[in-house]
Image 1 (tube, protein in one colour):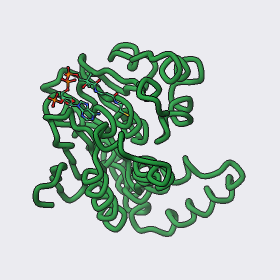
Image 2: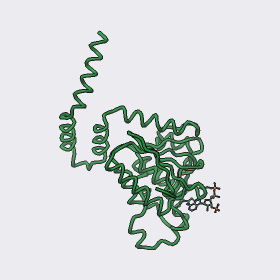
Image 3: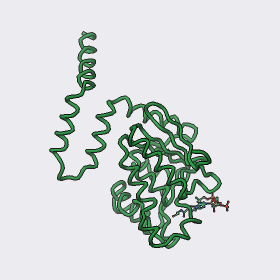
Image 4: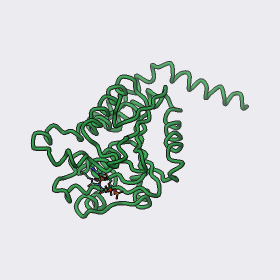
Length: 248
Ligand code: COA
């Protein structure tokens, strides 16, 4: 991805992507959307944990307003950000947003689409879209209420409330708050906890978590049936039982 507004560092079990337009507070432009789609494609075919961070002390200050100003009806209907964030939400393995500084507008919605959000004392999360004459159409109007409940979601969406790190942590919109220097390491600690489990079991759990209510419990039984047939289940349970025997 030469000249890309994102920097990707990949390893065997995880990928770290840095939104890298610090001069404009990592505003999400079309090129960034395209490059993140490309990354999603890679992670769909080779599932790994995804960590998303911003450069220069900001997560992302929303969609690029210079581009946004020129967009018309058909651009909105293409779902530029909503389509990308939906794809991020559906990635097979868990996703972690490392939210240092501002996560506003589309930046906040990208963080909402992730499974986990870690912050720092400077984190500020909000959806100022109505102030620009538009709405939070990339997940804000519905996903935020799922995360923090209707009262706080309405404060953010309708009354311009911006949450600081403490408030967001109290609401568990941020799963953890750490010093800025520790944020990358904290992200890797969460990734380590995820990858310590059987990847296929984590993947299926994430998929089932978001499955429609009516699909349960059959879909759970079918997924469990798949796991029961995997050697990894037998190996992990044998290791547990052997360790107990050794302790005796
Ligand atoms: N789109 C395009 N450019 C943006 C941007 C965005 N979403 N957010 C910031 N920028 C640009 C600014 O225009 C400025 O450019 P300049 O240096 O050419 O003047 C540069 O980034 C730095 O922004 P600035 O406002 O000076 O930084 P700050 O640290 O004082 O404030 C924010 C940071 C995030 C509070 C502020 O930039 C802001 O409110 N951004 C817009 C947030 C928003 O409304 N997002 C929703 C979009 S739908």
